[in-house]
Length: 133
Image (cartoon, rainbow, N blue to C red):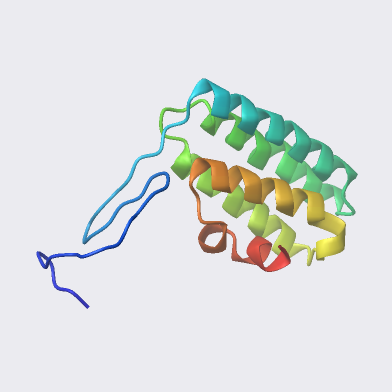
């Protein structure tokens, strides 16, 4: 492990929101086109949740808390933190009800797409969902 202040050598790096080195941070902002894409995916996510074989209480939390949080986050200058929290809430709800992949595949795939667009590692913030992919 390199100590602080040690040089870092890398190969070619490309992507969105990449940070390299001790204490490095990256900020991801999204433009209007990406905002529209995420909002379209959030509309699909609402449909998937409403049609999923889940207890009504879980659907209520997802539709009244998680999805609105994501809709607000997409309009923020830096949506990543709030979006991560909302995806974590979805993860916790689905894990809490013991969701199985066949019942929530649309939810899982849509959340995964949103996470990828915003630059969130779904395996980190939503390990249960990642396991259903």
